[in-house]
Amino acid sequence: MQKVGVFVDVQNIYYTCRQAYGRQFNYRKLMQQLTYQYDVEVAYAYAIASQDNGQIKFQDALRHMGFEVKLKPFIQRSDGSAKGDWDVGITVDIMSQSPHLDKVILLSGDGDFDRLLSHIHQHDNTDTVVYGVPSLTAQSLIKSCQHYIAIDPEQLL
Image 1: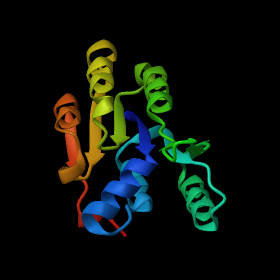
Image 2: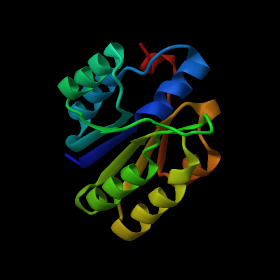
Image 3: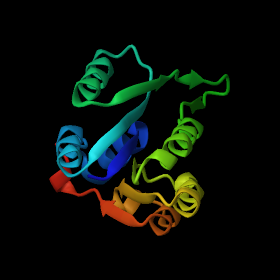
Image 4: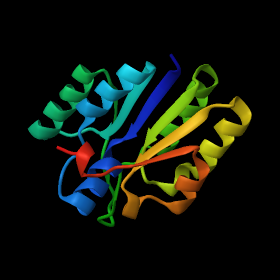
């Protein structure tokens, strides 16, 4: 079986699925499919730390499914804007794991990851897969991966 790593940009998947479909992504179904098809070496879910009870339960559910949940504090700036993205953390983890994997599976529509996926495919010969909502996934990200899987209503709760 191929060794794979799963990397989930939780905020991106949450907001794109909600915007496009008004529903949430089914992580349990995804993990069942992936563990049936592959040897899942690592599975990371990158989220924002929250005191919200619903978020805490969701993160616990992800852990129960086999994800290592990585949390970053939500930062509210003095000008009212907010920051809480995991782009650099996801990039570092993918770059450190890709030499040991046959395939990297990224759940995100963020075009900032396009160069990363091109790089690991060229330098580590790692196959790359992106799951994203079609209307909200950057074309540059779709073009940079070897396989694009459109998130559709079948993959939602």
